[in-house]
Structures are given as C-alpha cells and as structure tokens.
Length: 504
Image (tube, rainbow, N blue to C red; front, side, top):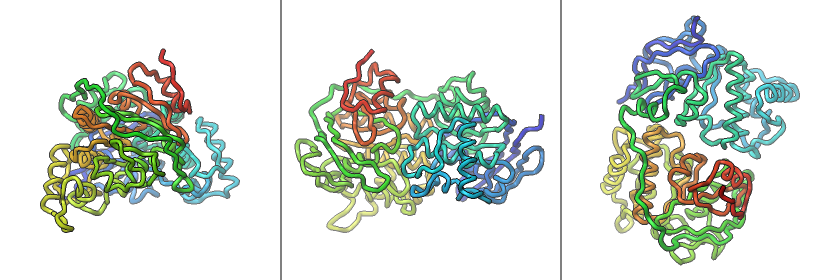
C-alpha cells in the first residue's frame, strides 16, 4: 500500500546546528503516528517542513506517491495537511465562527459557516457553539475551535503539537475519542507529545528523534513509557526522589485574597486562603483560565493586593511590588516563557539580569555588573543542562524546553524562601521534566516552600505534599496528595470549594 506521506532523507541546518539530519519516515492513511524526542531533537522543524513553514535543505517528500514540496502553509492545506499548534492563534473578542472564518481561504457566509461548525461538532463529538465569544471559552474549548477549523478543510493528515498540555483528564478523553473517529475515517494523525502514557493509549506507531536523527521506532502499546523516554534521551532516566522533611513554620499565608479581574477575559480571585510551610510543596491544579495567572501575579507582586491579604514570614507584603518581594525571598516563574518569564530578543545574560539583579547582587551603585550577570547565566546553563551555544544567545533562539529549564534554573539558583511556579514542565521532554521536578524537590528539602501551579495532574501527584484546585477563581481546601483518587481530584477541580473531600 502506498503511504499517505513519505519523507526521505530530510535535512535542515541552521547556523551552528543541524535540526534534522537525513530523516525518513512513512505515515499510512488512518494511522496515528507519534513523533517523539527531547526538546531540540528536531520535531518542530520536521513538522514545519511538512506544513510548508520551512524548506528542507536536502531530501524529498511525497504525498499519495506524488512529489510534495509546499512553499507555504496554504499549499500544504490545499494538499490535505492540517495543523493544530501548541499555542492557539485565536482572537478573544471574536466569536468561534468569526475566528474560524479568518483561517479559511474562501470562507462562506457566517450563517452557513455556523451550520458547518455545528455539523462537524456533532459528527466528531466536539461540542461547541459557533456564536460564543472565544474569550469566554476554556482551554479545551479553544482547542476544539482549532481542530474544527482544520476539519472544515477535510484534511488527509492532521498534525497535532502537544494537544493535551492544557486539558483536564475529561477533555483529554473527548479529544482522544475525536482522534479515533478521524483515524477510523481514514485521516492520518501525526501526534507530538511528551506525555508518554497518552502515546501508549492512542498511537499505532512512534518514530523517535534524537539530535535531529531517527534513532528508532516502536509500537507504543507494546513499549513502556520509561523505555520510550530512554530511547529519546539515550540513557537511563533517574526517578525524582526526595528525602523526608517535616514541614516547618508558616512562611506564606493568604487571608481571603480577593482581586478583580485584570482584563475583560481574566478571572477574579475570590477569597483565597492558604498557609504554606517551609519544606512543603503545595500543588495547585485546575483547568486553564480559572485564575492561575492571576494568582501567580498576586503572589509575585505584579498585582498588588489589599492590606492584610498576603503575609510573608509574618510581615504584610500585600502592597509590595515584585522587586521588593524578591529581595525578601519570594520568587516566581510565570507560565508564559517568551514575553513574560523571558524577553525574547534579549540575551540569556540580560534575561539573567532581569530577575537576578537583586538577590545575586548584579549591580553596584546603580551600575549593572555584566561580567557577574554573564557568570550567573553560565551557572544556570551548566546546572540545568540548557542546550545553547552560550549566554550571548537570545532567549528566542532556544527551544521551548531549554528556555523553560533556563527560566526555572534562574529562580532556583537564587535560593528563594518561597518559589511559585506556573506550569514548570509545560512542553518539556521526559528528561528535562524529571530534572526540573528534582530541582523543586531539592529546593523543598533544603527548607524552601514551593507552590507548583500545573495542569499536569501526574506531576502534582508525584512531587506535591498537598493538593488544591482552582475553579472560577476560588481555591479548594488543600488535601494531602497521598491517597487522593482521580475522582476526588475531579470533584475539587469541579468546584468543591472549601470542602473537605473525604478519602476512600
């Protein structure tokens, strides 16, 4: 049988790095094919060549046995290739139908398009009202918009990049049911994810990339997640471990923290109370858009709070800004890597200076100490295995996972008393995720207190001592993670605010 898509000897090089080196693979119609690899292994470059965003230096592609060399995404879509990106490209102020129309070459009238959206929505189990404003949608619903936009183009190959990174377990199941229907109808799916148990549950075949080259293939359902991860990194993976530490005194306390929404599509915080102790890791879960960003901003000092609502080491810091809080030892790493946690066009040295100046004493009498900042950046790169030619490189030149390692390392190495991180391992490979989780565990073992905000429930169950859930800006009562079931977590994420969730 002729493969739907065939890649032969694809090679793409950039200054100082070969992103793809003689890559070959085949995808059959109806096949769910996983593409696995560490951050920087070449996955993104490969799918960009398939989708017409990047031109290969060498090699060829065939679609249905005919030459395939899309010069731009429009040509790829015309040939039957659709792609759902990891980062959504939607306008919050427009409706679902209006957003989908913007992504179509010859969009029909909105009335007709709305009917098409309803039909595709019903056929593939993706409930979505075409007249809803995107700014009011959950992350899972936004993803449905992107998928339906692709499905309206009748794709023969659907590329999905980290599609479950911001979904709840229930939304993941809906997505998987949709993908299985598409596969049964003959649509091939090229699936990129670092969640290896999901790969085992969904995919028929996996191709593993390492340093731009294909290093192996496997049948995921017959291969353990650990074996796949070790194929990706080429070494035995260490399991994050932690020495037993009894929590110490209360270092951070929130007293009915309430703040209005910072924007029309934000989420107000509603009477959030908690106590965090030294040596403790508190995991906070929840569906994206339920107040995670707003809570981090309130803790970091980006959003001041009313007097009395935020206490750090017994002192009221509610009105203090980020630098004043950093000086005292309350540090934070936000979810958005480029533009918030790091300035894209600034070098790693400059980005190290941005948050490290106060605690690392990178300035003298008002003058910036650039040699010291460069040394700090080099320590981060070395300690967290950040793959980059050096600290002079711009933040945007790093892969997403390597930039994440830099951002987390920058805060951990400043020896915080309290560290608040949002999505610490979002989009990073198994090896990098294990390293970041180990760094957070080591930080708590050393006596710091850590708040981990994450949509990865497995991550929270692995490293957190207690778990709480955000829902519509409210925080459930924190519960010990030991013994918590998926049903109990779902109840908390669904709005069991302030309730003691009974253990079974």
